[in-house]
Length: 552
Image (tube, rainbow, N blue to C red):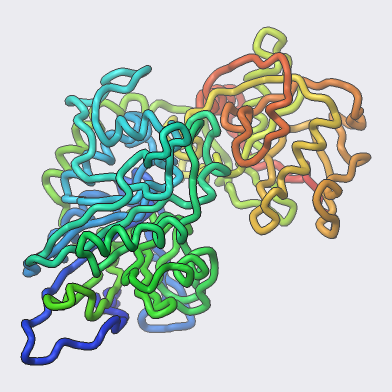
């Protein structure tokens, strides 16, 4: 039997001279950390992929995750430690599977509170339903539209959200506290929480209206004098931004990405950084600081062991390792099981509702041009839902790839349930049909490269096609004469009815040209359009994926 465990302590960072023997012994502190849980109360399909412990040239998949198993591991990792704290680096909710998303992520907030989470940074997905809904997650109460749907009243998070860099423009105050100070055997430790600066380009502008997301490093550095004045020397940053390594889950090989430059900009007073957002796992020394991340969907728990000098009150050393949440060997926590069962009883009749069938897995993975089989089907479903005059008169539909969160995987019998579709479209965005000129359509497509390092190629409905040239620059990638609808060239001066989701309609993902559309008509939710399409067209097969053509 393969030993799939890794050493808990994978990297040690020495941060200050070790206290002399004449001084009081250092105080031990264990920090447990997670990131990007995304409401995966049940183990995610596919678990986690790691390097084979018996053959470093191969990769293997290990079944991992789920709140029931995570709670058990968290308990085990806390055993024997006088001082411990459980923290997170954001995106605990949002883009969640059906069981959590149907109840607006209330089950996830309850599950994490129950397993003892103490503090979390706010991620971009915490803003998926807007600032007011995030405040409800913290404080409790019924949903303003769907009201109270759960098996018991929702009382809010027992852990504290932190967001040092997120400000209300009107008041100049942060939406959530910037930091929290916890004291361990008389030594104060500050935990600063940060949302990534790029949040406005990742969520609906309506939900964050009036908010400002400031530079991460500048925000932290500005807080250092305040913390020092309060007697704090030990500082941990929880940041929802991350890196892209090339090594295994306890390695740091080839680390790149925003977190590297951010950490290098941090004041030297920052000792440890818990990161996230990129859905990767790593344990790093960046600029003399310990930097960690724990994959995604609850597959890992990071254990960070710090030693605190009782004289200087600073961090002597910090070491860390990522621990797999093994579903095969970790028992299920009984309290978590009871919580999930309570929500399952309410959700199962809807989740198990037949939707249709597929002949093969519908993948969300794009080809070289940016088109995916599932993206085609979703765009077709949205066009079908809005094509009649009464429902919008749409002739084209676009959908954003970031809104497609999971493949629709084929089971042995090909059957697809409502929950399967919901997993691929978990945001419950309403469809909006609006009028755009041919020129505006080209402008929208050009905005797919607002971030050249991360182009967002819209998925398009059948009948519409275009080509783009990868060698061209901004505003010149779309080949105007290759844009067509049902074989006819798109006329820049003509007007077309186009369906998008309400996230795109308000300029989400940087598609600001869509806000110029006129005569909007609100339609059904995207997942309901997909469900209706499956019911009418099953069995569904992947299409040829030839609607988008890339040149160069």
